[in-house]
Image 1 (cartoon, helix red, strand yellow):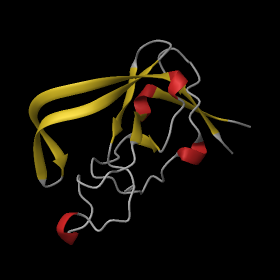
Image 2 (cartoon, one colour):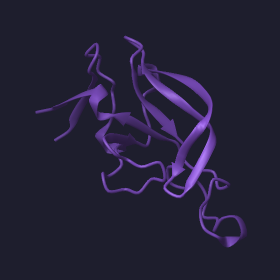
Image 3 (cartoon, helix red, strand yellow):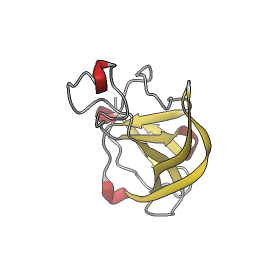
Amino acid sequence: MASIYCCKECGANLNLSTAQLFPPDFYFEAGNKDTLSFASIDNTKFKLEKEDKIMPFFETVNYWGIQRKRTKIKCTSCGKLVGYVYDDGPPLTDSPGQFHFGPSQVIPRAPRYRFKIKALRITSET
């Protein structure tokens, strides 16, 4: 049984595929609370907008960042912010990381499209 994901603001079908949905217990460095994470999206349904802020923030549990660069995901129909793109998806290579210390920001990672649950209307397809 598949789900239909629509924008809560305007009701537009966002054409998100349940097959591209990461499992809820999948670990991400930026967390996964109150969000749904997808491996890919239909770019015709969204407007992507770069954001660059200089301010302190938690990048991971044990690491502070100063400059936050991320991409906003907005609904094409109404322009409402529905989520963000993060680069903390699965590694794109089998490399053990810099100096063999494991995956880090140095290893290229697949994008993760993280949607806020409160910005979506989710219905079941019958």
